Amino acid sequence: MESNPQPTEKPIKPLDPFRRAVLRGLGVLLPPLLTIVIFLWVGNTVNTYLLEPMESGTRQLLTRHFRGDIRTRKEVTELDIRDGQVANAMRPYQPMADDLLVPSSYYDYVEEHGGKPVPQNADGLIRDYVNHRFLSPYIVIPTFLCVFILLLYSLGKFLAAGVGRIFWIQIERVIHRLPLVRNVYSSVKQVTDFMFSEPQLDYTRVVAVEYPRKGIWTVAFMTGESLLDIRGAANEPVVSVLIPTSPMPFTGFTVTVKKSETVDLNITMEQAFQFVVSCGVVVPPQQLAEALAERELRSQARLADPGGL
Image (cartoon, rainbow, N blue to C red; front, side, top):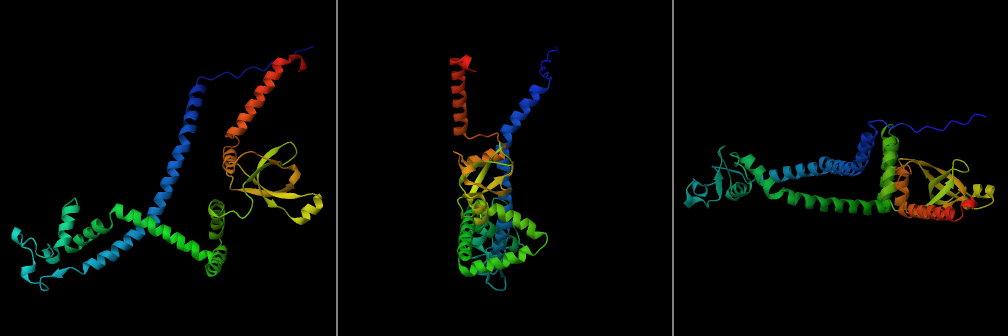
């Protein structure tokens, strides 16, 4: 009788330790790096499409307003114009290289806070005055945040009202008729609704179901009671569950299962998402601890009664 050949261990290649070390370092580095990249992308998007247009529009309005303070020599007397002497430094107008006059207070402010050579033409001085006096970062950023939050609050209150809701429904109907835009909009709306909308169903219950066949367990999110016709056919309560797909839990499909065939899991929604996104690598701590404790008990029982195996 021939003996079965024993499986041989796979030989370790010279570069295997190096490759494992590189992959381990990449696994440690990628999560914080991707987090930073996402936040930078969001910040850059907000800055490019919201902050910069608002700042540019404000700059144009303020520049146009303060440009009205520019005077010509015919509009004022010589006694109101500085001539470079210290005794006449308090005169209200400063002459510029383009033979126009700007208020002395504007010129002095730019000279004090500009940090660079003062522009020698009236328009350039007015732009610098507006930038340094009203559009400094410590003024623009808090003001933008306050206006942005107020805008979001007003929009939310408007859409919560009956007229606002009807108005937005009409806009979405138009969007859904556009061939390419409706596909992108629908996908983005599903993600944003899931992240920011208040839950209308009991969506915080994490269960396990035997799917796609008996013996294969899948983590799922219970969404509520299912259809009455299915309940009647099953002769017992049934529930609807969302089966998420790895590594993108925001996509998936809905199935109806018997309520008696679901197993409640002692994990939170966030832990369930981590489990799905990591393809089962990240196990909730309490589940891992219970598994280790159970394994230890089995080991102790095996050592205490070796003949019973």
